[in-house]
Image (cartoon, rainbow, N blue to C red; front, top):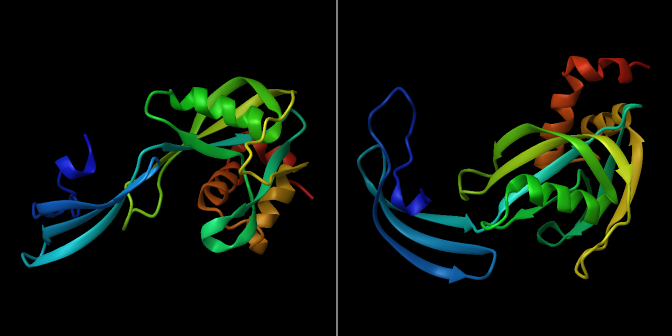
Length: 198
C-alpha cells in the first residue's frame, strides 16, 4: 500500500491518526516523487506536510568473511558534498527482488559474490520526511570477482577487520545510517565476538 493511500498512526496508545485531506505532486523524476499534502494532524488541526516518495527500495550489504574481515566502499555523496565510507549499498527497483539487487550491488561495488545470505536489518530512513525503506543483508562465504562500477560512481574499496570498521563508527568516520546500524548490530552479535577482541 502506498503512503498516499494510508494514514500514518501517531502511536499505538492513541486512536487519533494523521488524515490526508488532499495531495499534489510538485516534483517527480525517475527516482523520487515529492508530494505536497494538506492534512489533519493528530491534534485535530489542519496543516501541510511535504513528503518524498522513493521509487526504489534501499539495500545494503554487510559482507563478513570467515576471518572476521569486512568491506567498505568510499564514494562522494552529492547532497552532503563529501566523501563517505559505507557498506555496499544501492537501490532495488520495484521489478527486482531486494535480494537480487543486493547480490548485484555487492558484485558491482565490492567485486564480491556470496553463497550465504540472510536478512540483517529493516530500516525506515529519515521517516519524518520520506517513506524510504531499507533492507540490509548479511553476506558470508565470500569469493572475489570483478567490480562493475557505474559511470556516475567514484568508488574505492577497503578490506579491513570488522573491529576496525566498528571503531570507524565510534570515531565518527562512518556516518551513513545504514552502515552505522549494520556495524553496531554486528558488534552485539555473539557470532562475531571472537573477531572483536584487542
